[in-house]
Image (cartoon, rainbow, N blue to C red; front, side, top):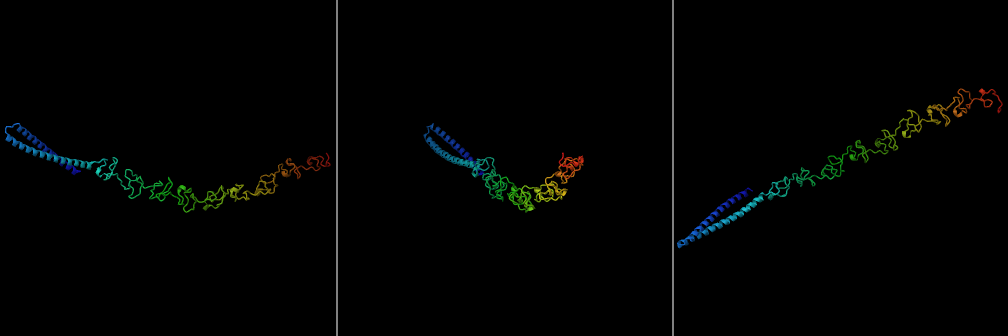
Amino acid sequence: LLESSKTMQIQATKIDELQAALDKANSEKDELQKKLDEALSKPEDTSKLDACMADLANEKKNADSVISSIKQKFMSLKSEADKAKLALVEVTTDSDNDGVVDKKDKCPTTPENTTVDVTGCTLDNDKDGITDDKDQCPTTPEGTKVDDTGCTPDADKDGVSDDKDQCPTTSEGAKVNEKGCEPDTDKDGVVDSKDNCPTTPVGVKVNKEGCTPDRDKDGVADDIDECPMSPEGAKVNEKGCEQDSDKDGIVDSKDSCPTSPKGSKVDETGCTPDNDKDGVADDIDQCPESPEGSKVDEKGCELDTDKDGIVDSKDKCPTSAEGAKVDETGCAPDGDKDGVADEIDECPESPEGSK
């Protein structure tokens, strides 16, 4: 660029010098023409006139030659000047204003204000083939395979690039570790997102849900269940066995008397035996052989409502006055069977059947 400018300055100087010589030659030509005209206007001395005209003609010829030579040089210099101007334009034009002249610009249509390299192209600092203005990962290690955003592909969108992802098909949205795999906090082989028991002790065998198997579905894992075949829905204790609230040896689900006193002897229903089925357990029944269906008191003995010593089930006179003397039927004695009790019968020996 500096040399082209210097060349143009030299050519401009030469053009100015030639222009001055041309102007001088033209002036001399005009002077000769003036002298010729004067000589022609005075025809008295013909011999001098002819000599003068010959001299003038010769000088004119020389002047024309000089002028012609100057014009040729002038045209040559002008042509060279035009070429120099074109060369100057060529080495100074920067169409996209990126600081790299078009002649050296491999990307001559770079958008304005874009930072470019020495070739006039947008920078690609990490050399991944994606220019910095479009590169969302501008510091990718050299040689890394990238997508059209300049970043290493991450097919499952878990934030771990495919080249480092040991689990490249993780479900979208799942939390992953630095290897791109879903965490398995309790190390049971079932990832946390599918683990219904995420705190299983290390080494415990689990099912596909991450939980210890529980065949009887009582909430107690088989490996610690002392009663692994409990009926479904039964309430169990921490050992997986059905509860026995009254500690009588009969589980609650089969215990018809779930509140039996501690230490009570019970039958297979969980209740204290009641052989006479009067509702009073044998261990407190003072009359353990009461007739079936008879009404008994809290001691298990038949009732004697009129307190005459004859139980109601055998008392034909259940409303005898308290303290009255009665026979084995619970009624006052009537020796002559006349319907009047002996204690008020004034004729206690009336013939049988008499009125």
